[in-house]
Length: 286
Image (cartoon, rainbow, N blue to C red):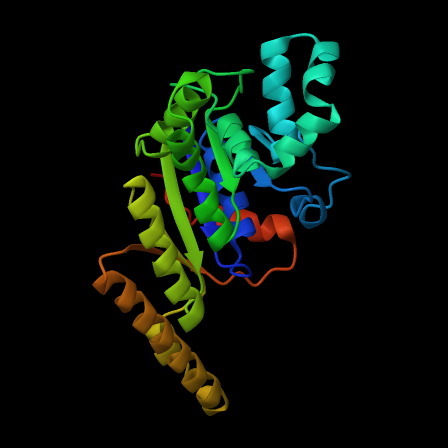
């Protein structure tokens, strides 16, 4: 089982990168689920799908997509344990229980992580027939809350099944043989600073060092520019050289701070699948 979390500051292209990771793994022959979190689907519009919901929808060979929410994840797990839907409604769909669920800190995040990590080695709840799960995760601040949820709940509930489940979820998140974390940023000041801070939080919380993906870099280099001879292109060359130098500075900064960094190119396409397919060729396989 491989679980890949893609996060980063909003607007840096993490959803397209997550889709590219999922397509990459599917093309490698792995049965892959692309997961987005929340109540509204980005991929429904991006891929022009009729709907994306909790039940996986097929996108490509070996590739499905699903929208996970805390409420649906909790419901599925409870029904799996109780077996009888009428009993589930008695216990979970009364006003008192709903109120407690709504105010319980980190319970939605915990339910989502429980679903994502339900396969080996935990083997808890309904089976998920996938070799790889790629999570288009929350943006920076909310992602920190997501990965801290199992630890926080385990500290609050030290004994019993709930505490045990929280500790087992946390153990999977910290297992670098199962979970990998990628922080997407742009070659710009604010996204890089926020990406470094988020990477530090991930490493501090989970003990796993994430990989940086510097997105939308120019798909050219200095040598390409020097081969242009037309004087009409001098202004364009100068601008591109400035941009390349700018990107190199941020790349050097991340590498100097001992971050593992991959460059992803700017894709000059408007078709979503062409964007994702092109990015999938640049995605690291390990």
